[in-house]
Length: 407
Length: 136
Image 1 (tube, helix red, strand yellow):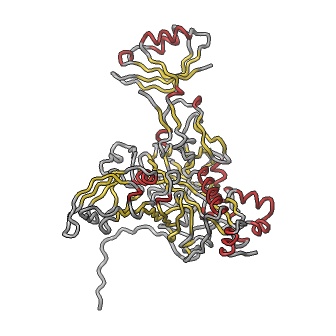
Image 2 (cartoon, chains in turn purple, blue):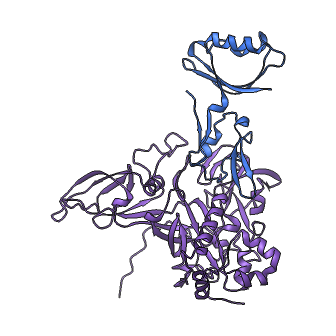
Image 3 (tube, rainbow over the protein chains, first blue to last red):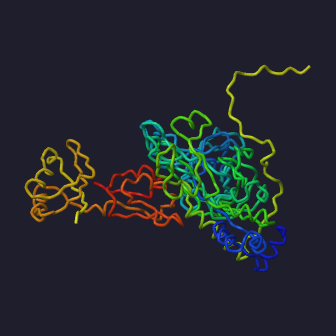
């Protein structure tokens, strides 16, 4: 049994495609077996909704009169600084940016009530945002200051551009120390009192295509409530990690860089988030359809929470000091019961990735495809795969290297 | 049936043994869930009170006459469901399971006001400001 993406698209256009979510496929396989399921199902939809810090957006603001070269100057949106090292009115706002006058962690733990993630949420909600800018002024761009209100619809290009999303599997964070820790994995109570995990598990896009057979550059996806595309592998893409017998990475592995038009998106699927003592970020909703090209792809999409193992890592010592120590490996099914066992102790679990919203995304994507509004794409270039030797290396601090003289 | 409530003390009552009176003079069972008492400021006591053969009406009258403002706890704690993304970050930290999963199949969160003791831990762990506790 095999089918091409072109054939699947013909079925979608004819309204004959069989599309199920990555949760529903489990029941289908249980009832019909792999072979029959693969013969009947054309597409399996996935989803994830979680904080993803390496997210951001670029905007073309439109030109002022007289013209102003914000490039090389300074710019803020709702008092949150954006990057202006481009041409006159192109700026980039990062999800974790915070106002210059935010007290940060001076009074620990800081609140971080508002930042880049919230600005992006406010913009997609259609709200007015205050834009201020200063520039040095040139003959061709004489204006030096700007202070105005603006909304998404007023701008030209407004593009979400996330350099790392959809991490394929992730750590489970615990705290072995005697004090409360405030981390990007949430508040960790001392002496192993809680464990925080962050994965959509069986619904997670890259866990349903663990070797990136169908997801690559150009793949059309659900992003923030609109249609987006995979740009390439995300930063820190690390496909060569240890894997289970099913081929699932035993920790963080593949990542995706993605992009999409913010004007199609909605605040339901792009949410600013404030992590006490840590900072601001953006929760991103992302879903990817997996074409069932053959039985092997169906097998991969039949992954269940019980198949996925995640490493339990101490965030008081191992994580901050970059030590590759693992306290235990637990399955996502165990994490979702609300309690896991770590070094013989029972630990209560909490999630950071919303499974409830991931289900909704997989369902929405399924509806879009069934309605013929969303066609699948052939990747135009593959992501670096497990055997590629592509790795994620740490920074080596060093003195300046002697410059090489050409002879 | 124990009732959870918030007793708000004006600054001049901070050094008065009000709780002692509730127990000793009126025979109520007092379980203090949370207290914030600071000199020269309004004090706040979250308590669970049971009549248990004591004299409830008289005790309430005593509190009112003394100038203690009584508020039911349930009004104070708000779960803004429209802001909640059901990530479940709060559930392991909630000491009374007032915030807990309604359904482990769909992984949706539910808030049971009756179990809440207004400890405010959820305010620190929710990244989406979905929990709010209103105190004066």
